Image (cartoon, rainbow, N blue to C red; front, side, top):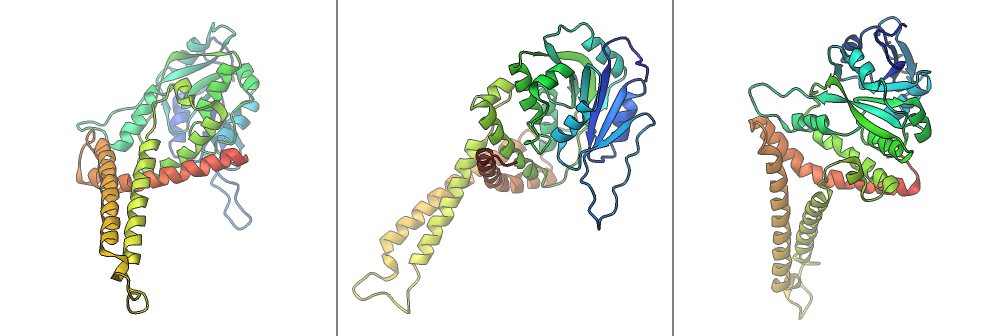
Length: 351
C-alpha cells in the first residue's frame, strides 16, 4: 500500500479475540497503512466448529496466534512486519479523525534513541451522571503510561528487548513490562499528539472480580523488575496489603468461631468427670470474644473498601449492590491470585 502521509513506514498490529468493535477500529484507521490483524482465538479442536472468519477489509493481513494471549499475538504481528516502526492498537479502541496523519507527525524526525511513541487516550465520560466503578477503572487508562491501546515502537527497540514476554497471558502488565525493558535497553519513550478514543465496555456484574487475575501478573512484575516496579512504571500503589488484612481478619474470625463451637459440644453424651463442661465457660467466652473482634475488623475493612468504590459513583441500587457483593469477594480472590502468581513466578510457570 502507498502511505497516505510522508513519514516513516509503519505497520499497525491489532491483536483480537473477535470483538465486534474490531470493524470500527479498522474503519477509523482507514486505508493507506499496512495493517496486520492477529486472530488470538483458540484453534478449534477436532470436534469444534471452525471459528467464524474475521470480517476485515481487503488488504488487511490476518495471522493466527492460537489463543496464547495478547503478548504472543503482538509478537507474531510485529515479527511479520518489515517496517521500521510498528504501532500496536487494541481491537476495542477507535483512532480519532486524522489519526494516520498525526501518527506520521509524531514519528517523523524522532531521534534514533527514541524507541517508542504513545498516543493520547481519551475515555468518554458518561452523560448526566457520575461514572460507575467500571467506568472509572477504564478512565484510568487515559493516564496510564506506555499501554498498547495505541503505542508505536521502533522495530530496533522491539528487537533489543526481544519483544513481549509471553509469560504474561492477559492484556495486563505485558505492555508495562515491555516498556521497562525497552528503556533498560537504552531507548527513550515519548508521548505523541495523536488521539485515540477508548469506549467503556459492559463486562457484567462480576467483571471486577475477574480482573483480580491481574494480581498474578503483578507477582511476575515484582520478580522481573524488583519491588519498586510500580514507581518505575508510573503506577499507583495497589490495595493488596489491605486485601490481605481483610482476608486474614475474615479467616481468623471463622477459625475462632469454629473452634468455639467445636469446644462447646459435649463429647459422647457429656463432659469428662471432674472437668468443666464444654471446655470451660471462660475459655469459650474468650474465643467468642476474639472471634467477634476479628469479625468486626473484617466488617470494618470490607465496609471501607465498599464505600471507597460507592462514594464517587452514581449510587444507583444496582451499582451499590454490585459494589457491596464484589467488595466482599474481591479481597480473598485477589490474595489467592497473588499467591498463585508468586508460586508461578518462582517455579517458572505461567500466570
